[in-house]
Image (cartoon, rainbow, N blue to C red):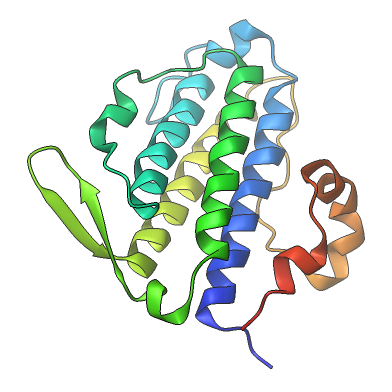
Length: 189
């Protein structure tokens, strides 16, 4: 039986968190200097790129939760210059995004989300906002991944989406995250 759109978004939230976990775990092998070093990309360093992902997650996840944080999310462009702190905060917002997606229903997926833009409230359908957020994260993780390739740390594989046959290959990471395959796939509607 095919998964519903709701289940697809739940799986996307888990995959997003897994990719962040993999990338930030690899980045933990960098020195503080290498993490902050100037590099060629949209943002000038791995630290700036991954902190950007974090603050944009704060912005959109807050809106998805019904909050009004708005652009206050990025008042500090690099709130966590140390990788350990960034990993902790990214994991926390990833858990929040998973919770948002775990609570989805077909009705709420098609519902509206109000996004505080300070001078106006942007209204988006929840599914479209989630697609935008996931695409944003993939885009900037790819940039950080490319920058990481210019260091002594091997970039992790990020182009997977939970293939059934590769479950044993991710079992240790799922254990680190406290997940099971059933958590990701067992909630299908």
